[in-house]
Image (cartoon, rainbow, N blue to C red; front, side, top):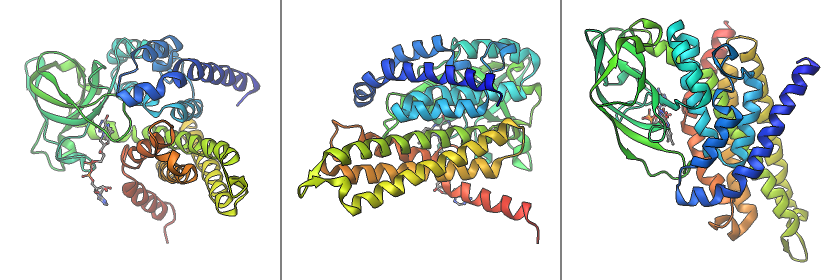
Length: 384
Ligand SMILES: Cc1cc2nc3c(=O)[nH]c(=O)nc-3n(C[C@H](O)[C@H](O)[C@H](O)COP(=O)(O)OP(=O)(O)OC[C@H]3O[C@@H](n4cnc5c(N)ncnc54)[C@H](O)[C@@H]3O)c2cc1C
């Protein structure tokens, strides 16, 4: 990074820190407890340009690097992970259009995604298909200059308060191999696009994650991403590296927040006449927690830099995602233990980290799959 780029990045990060301190931190606990959508915070995020932070300036965005974006996500997740989710899924949608869309689709959608006028996420998962996306059953059938979509999606984030998703469907359900019959559409809400219910979740509250049903939903044919059928799975998979980097960044944020709360509490809580941070059992925990945060951040930085250089980085992004999210889970639990009964109280943030962290183990490819991807890449890169 040049000194000028460094200065620009610092300006962006300072304004994000200020926003989080004044607009998010004071309200996070109340909104999360009530599972209330942070509508006012979203308006401020629009003003800051966060909905377009990695969209190319040519299409109305700010065009930040993935490395800077990862730092923003870490900061947001350290204060309230749900707020980062509002831009993360949205930007995965935007990145799919930026990467694979036709020029007309980019001109039509990216400027509106950048301002947040159109916002949303990604519609992949179905009741019977998550990891195995080729098993999806939602079908789009061509009808003149439209497609007619029927099927169901579930666990779709930003789909109640958002208005647009990229939607993975089968345009040829009988194709072999199955992925050749899969296509991706830019789907705006309209007749036949139904939000059936908002799901009740363990954590990641405040942000809307819903079940969707498509009943004869008519979508103009020019919303087919890239204008070609049969490329949908490929278009989704090529966004996974960015998705995993953003989940890793959330992991670093949650792991760091848990560490910071633990370090502060351990110095004030006294047992047997001394602060608990002077007991070796607590020091061992703090030492491990701090090491996890540093290691996670370094893996994240390495993956984000490789992505910015345009290199293939599925192994690096997988390692960062796996390690940082397991670290978030472990640090959340250790933070809870260090807080004793207070860690179990709804009045403190600690129990929220413990409820938010497990999502990170599942989203953007489960951590079981990450280890398999890492191993496969390892073998491929090191032939005997
Ligand atoms: C809060 C939340 C928000 C979400 N938001 C979205 C969203 O916005 N859009 C969206 O499309 N989806 C979303 N999801 C869904 C998420 O992407 C899926 O849950 C995830 O892909 C896993 O799929 P699944 O739940 O069907 O698990 P399954 O695929 O059924 O997996 C179950 C278990 O089997 C393991 N497993 C599966 N296959 C293999 C294999 N080959 N080898 C080894 N182990 C395997 C998995 O690791 C897991 O442990 C969200 C989920 C949650 C919880």
